[in-house]
Image 1 (tube, rainbow, N blue to C red):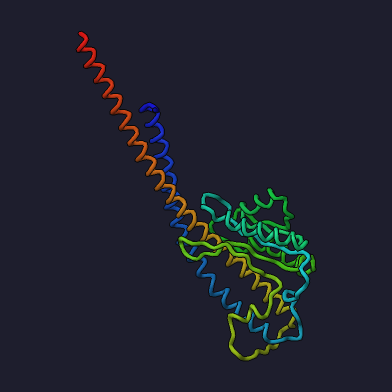
Image 2 (spheres, one colour):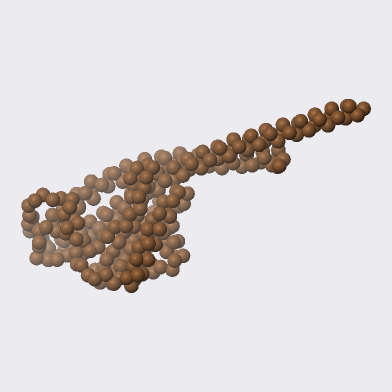
Length: 289
């Protein structure tokens, strides 16, 4: 059995660890509220631009947007959204497992994949698997800004426009509630009119007059729509990250508290055994005299 000094050292070490995890839990709780507010404030814009895009898809204009061009999938692009930091439970593991399964499906169909990494953890995963990396955006901080995302996003959109990829997918973690986050894989491109129209089924047709022309208006609007979807996905992922980190740190703090209680009990038993031994030696020595 370990000595009392060693047990005291272990107790002190676990107490210091618990202070750190408790502080991280409180910081994550504060950031989680802000991330949730930011995520919810971005939803009205995403819903409105989805409605406008759906209406345009029903208008049957004279110009077919390039982002709605359906082609046989021989090469795909995948935008992987992950966190920059760890200590958030199985958040990254779940979305990376989903991407791994999709890569396996693509491999069976002889479809090559070009990746865009948003977040350091996803970038590290792609580098370990030696995946083909088209673009990246890391170290986004606690607040996502479109300026830091636009370069990585545009690389995938330009590749689709040029025909270098035939479809673009988006993998991220959707925020459900504080205790539940769901990894999802969505198809971004090509946009399909049926999918867009599900949200805004008004039962009547639409017609528009385009200025300066249908090509520039539709391509510009659909590009903004795709960017809004990706920004919303990053905001959802950040809200999920802070929620998962808060839950993970709370579990770590509770476990540390239990360990401290067990070590304290062992310490008391060891100390009691040492005192009993000393008393026995004193009594034995007195009896011998």
